[in-house]
Length: 226
Image 1: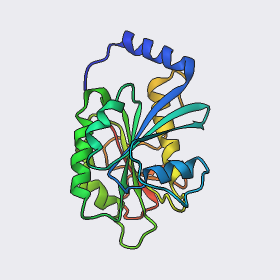
Image 2 (image 1 turned 180 degrees about the vertical axis):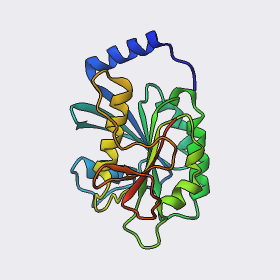
Image 3 (image 1 turned 135 degrees about the horizontal axis):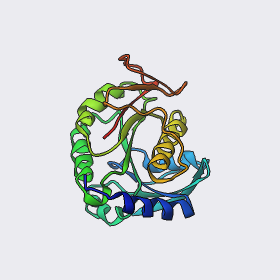
Image 4 (image 1 turned 45 degrees about the horizontal axis):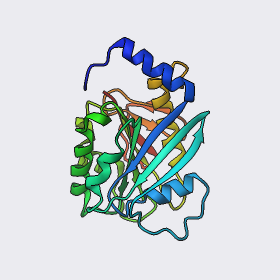
């Protein structure tokens, strides 16, 4: 991760504090559920959603912060254009289709390509394990291991279970993201509270308490850090 001097970090924080804005990039393979998640978070109808052929922009307010969210299409032909949206990104939400075992290798390849981008250096990473409501979906442990998340040392990360269809897990995941980014960028940022330090800490998203006890429950999120 590139060295950032304390003086430059101070300037960044002061400039950010004026607007209390966060730029969040929603990415993932096609059919992962990115747009559905955004619509669900925004209280919109999810009954008729077509594939994103370009990008969508939405603004959400969370804990006094304005989240400017860019939802970019995940089709293979569109992925080379992802780099056009990297500038000034504070967090990446990587959405995984937990039921798509056939493409989890492709999912890992694309994710690690993102993590090598200099313009995304240090950006908070929230991995949404979507479609947990479907029978046969991969567990958090399976997704963590398939994506080799424990090898990530350049970004604070968490893998969080959710269902875009039911809405379960979405708010908890976004709340973690806001706390994490706010604590990193703003003087008066919120505490990220439920983050781990070694990639093995499990966080009970119903209570917000951290535990080092291993579990296979999809009601827990797995977190790691730089």
